[in-house]
Image 1 (cartoon, rainbow, N blue to C red):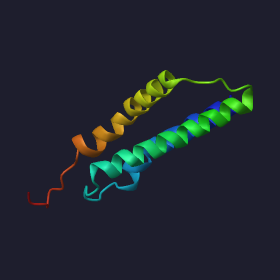
Image 2: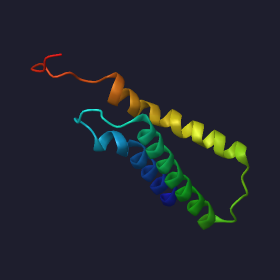
Image 3: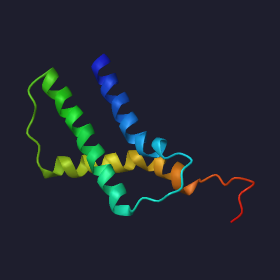
Image 4: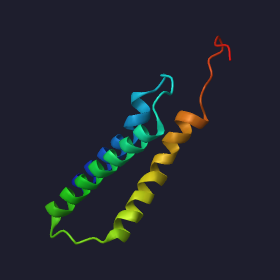
Length: 97
């Protein structure tokens, strides 16, 4: 149970890293850079999941459906960070628009 909790905590930290790192900074990254960042972090979380699976037993072979579903779940779970970062942006009172 402890290993599973560690993997979940690591996944949450990896999902929140891009928004946490740039908190308070102006948005200046191109879309391609952000997509590449999301894909790299997806691969990192997947690698940790495969390592966890190999540690507890025999790993199963996965098809393209597995990767399509896990990428979709990854993007859905990352959406709250996107909302907090871009859609609920807090404007400073002293700043002029």
